[in-house]
Length: 325
Ligand SMILES: Nc1ncnc2c1ncn2[C@@H]1O[C@H](COP(=O)(O)OP(=O)(O)OP(=O)(O)O)[C@@H](O)[C@H]1O
Picture (cartoon, rainbow, N blue to C red):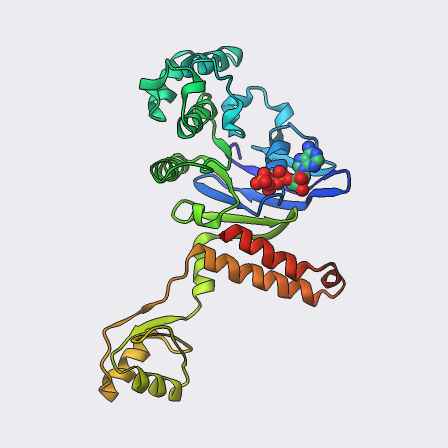
């Protein structure tokens, strides 16, 4: 229970804008959960409510079963990275962490430990104003880890990082989750979560679009698609179509087949003497799976009728493009 995040019927409105709309999901321990949606989808507002920085209009946002305001030692229960630029530029990295540790009754030795953990030990005496964006992100993550909390919330930690920084954060988040922590990491880019998230909570316009294990999402999107490479494309296509497959050519010697399992395809081609070099399941990327998912959501909304008048399908398509741009 300690290492969970629970959001139930959460709602927040700013003037006419409904930022978060009847949102419910749970983040479990031992996993990296990606919190995905286009800019303005409501991710930061949800995280701010989890951290007691905004009050919900309705519903609840709980850390380890309790609202943030009732946590006795918050830094030991949840660590957060909201805005890495929030450190004063004249403050040295190490002093920033020492100040945080002191004000929260945490031992000073934790500072050296987390500096080491995020790879910032040698730069710890430099002023934060001289840090690169990647170093500021590391400092922010060090602050989040100071109380060794079972729950971590990171808002767009990858934003603006170079490939080396992105690789580091991915591996680091996975390692933190493997230690049994619940890790919620937001991004407006689905591709950033490829290879790091185990689970996805996808939102659009403040509402839940999907709450799914990454593996299931990818498997569903891959369907029964089989990729095939052959130098006898025409023969292969007509044979497989005759046997009930749906075949789409996607190169001079490659095609995608649906409706026939891979072992049946190899048996058919072998028996007919059609040469082939590769048969394998056609893996989709997380981005492609997301596009498929939002297409379904758009169709579902269109079928709802009344909402279609609000133009949701078009908006969803636009949101999808933002996510993959
Ligand atoms: N303090 C505020 N006052 C007015 N509107 C706000 C406020 N905070 C957020 N909003 C609005 O609420 C909606 C959700 O914003 P939010 O920042 O939560 O989205 P997000 O998914 O985190 O996007 P981003 O990745 O751009 O931060 C947006 O339309 C935003 O303009």
